[in-house]
Structure formats: structure tokens, C-alpha cells
Image 1 (tube, rainbow, N blue to C red):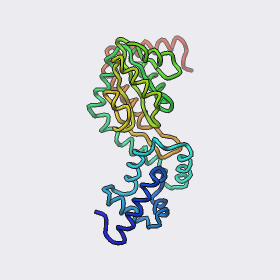
Image 2: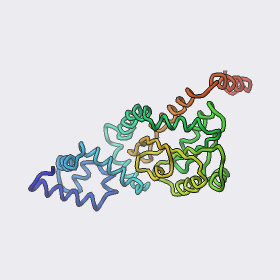
Image 3: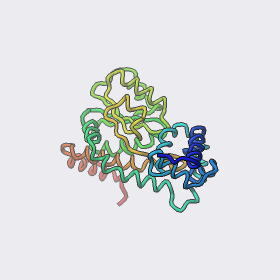
Image 4: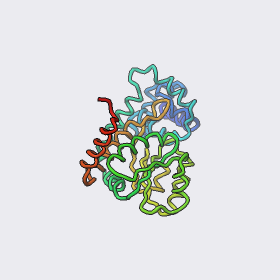
Length: 271
């Protein structure tokens, strides 16, 4: 319940400023917002708690989830300059919090379903664009160690057009979809879906636009408190996914042994 009198007036002042400057506020600190509204930082904290948040940090994270698709590189530069002088680096803090969420996410029924999805189809296509595509080589490298039929589709590959243009029997797509959500990728997934190709996805939030196109959808948070989004929790989740898929793979030990022997014959690694 927001306080009455002068406090209520200050809260209305903050609310009006937030409503008119959503993108700016999503990149502010509590002191920045207090200064912009000509109120105390304590008033900003009480405003956030009056809205049901534990404080400004939770409030601004929620706001960032709503607005960050509108962030542009110059906005991130402003955010970077603000955070560089802080004692506790917000990027490390946010990634630590993201990693702390992983045990529950990994134990979820969604993850178990995604593991089975990765194993079920003879051919699995890892697909993404722009920043979302940067995690795909890591996933493909290790997934290929435990199973055949792992391929990569990005807009630069012929496979991208092939998958969208006609049915692909025994094929499924695992899409990586992170902000800023690429229209090219979402349109492509719609084209793939028209051929009844199964699609699963790893994305960053429940409201991600890929949620209407894919099943299952694993939601793994990314860190925003830097010049570019950070994917530490995503990378750990991918490794966990591969490990769990490996546990369900028959004759895995002999497969890995054959790979080791081949690499040994080719002197892949230095002695």
C-alpha cells in the first residue's frame, strides 16, 4: 500500500516519470532515478516496495524484461559507464543469480522432455541467428560426440532454406532464441513449422516469442548488466543437457573410445 500525503505525491511523481521514460529507467540505478525525480533514494525504494517488489533491483529487472528488446547499443554504453565504477560488478552478480536458478531448471519436467527430444529423432538441427547462434557451435560439438545426425542451420547455410521449403522426415529443430529476438529467425521457424517439423527451443523468458512455436521450451536466464548479453547460465545448461542425453545413449563408451582412437591415430593432440 503506497503511503498517503507527501509520500503519495512523490510516488505519483516517480510513476509518471517511469511511464514516460521506460527505456531510460530500465538502465538506471536507484540513485539515478531518485535524482531524475528529485526525490530521495529511500523514496524510490519505498515506491518499488509499494508496487510489491522487494526493492529497486527486482523492480528494474522486471522492467528490463518488459523493455529490453528496445535497448540499442548506445543505451548499453550508458549502462556500461555507470557500472564500471561500482564495487560489486552487476554482471557477475546477475550471472551468479542466474546460475543459482539452474538446479531447479535442470530438475524440471521441461528439461527431462528436452533431453528425450534431443535423443528421439535421427536428425537434429541446431538453429539460430545473430547472438543466439553464438552458442550453437558449443552445443553441436559436444552433442556430436554422443550421437550422429547433428547439424547446424543459420541464415548463411543452404540447410536454412532447405528446412523451410519442404518436409524433412525424421528431422527435428532445436532453436536457440535470445534477445534481441530476430524476426528472420521467428519467420523461419514459422515456415519450418508448416511442414510439421517438430521444434523445441531454449530461450530466456516465458514471454519469449518462440513460446508459441515450440514444445518443449526451456527458459534459461541471460545476464543483461553489460554492454552485451552474457550466456553463462545458458552454456552450463547446454552442458547439462548433453550430459543427460549421454546418460540415455546406448554404447556410449564404445563410441567415445572409437573417437579417441581415431584422434590418436591422427595425432590430433600434442603429447
